[in-house]
Image (cartoon, rainbow, N blue to C red; front, side, top):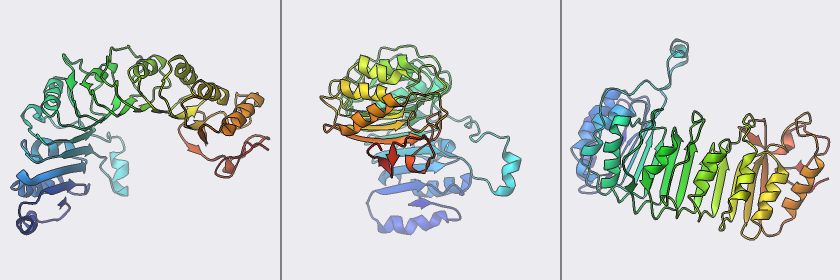
Length: 377
């Protein structure tokens, strides 16, 4: 059932009756629908809330809708996805509102985490739904009471002053954990997942200094690991890599050459070996010879290497003057028969945008032709 603009709440009754006891999915994804209209339609659907299976809210008013529109008890709920989106303005209003923040502060209401009971919950995905420090213990209690969770995604839900929990919640069935936009390394201690398979951690751009935390064996079973914005924080990168000894697929996203630490990623991968690493994807490789050194260190296990490379895509007047070593490394990487090698190139020195080399007027010696790297000319 889709909650949408101008829909009469009474229109849900007939199809709900015809569907008998079948489980239903509820979607609030029409951003143009006003808050009161959404609440009225959810109230009508809530008469059959015992049949709700999946709930998806993607709306500018997601916070109050979760707080007041979603029942506290949903016995059949398996998936809850709540995302606060930007409110789209007509062109005539853009100028008037341009000085206002994209997300207004959340209303002064609680989300009553300690009262929510979704005992069949398998997936929880929250985006821009703020967890205040004073509510953290209640939220951790909610997670602890829902040990059936298999997927937990938390994106930009923390205030700048992250709360240090007094305990770690164990989720024995959790297979995927995503912690996006974390402002403190302490957040890595919130959850322990003894059967975790996929881990995604994104460091907030506002987190400048990393204090090593004892993650213990919280994520020790993770095999698929993605770390975002860790390339400029070597201590953070090393801290997390030590916590995932079984990682076989590793993706490192975002390298910013403005940081004096931007050249540390490859060195750390060599210093702290991951014995089972088979697939490596680095966005923002600053040097092909450095990438070659990593590939040599993992030659016995690697089957795939993918790189978004900076020193190949930068223009002729870049600070990297000696290209012979670069070209030798590129030739070596492409000639290896033990692993697949794929490369794309950066449009700028900040590693933010990547494209194929074919449409760039670069150096005198072209290293690419067509959509991906070919043989050197």
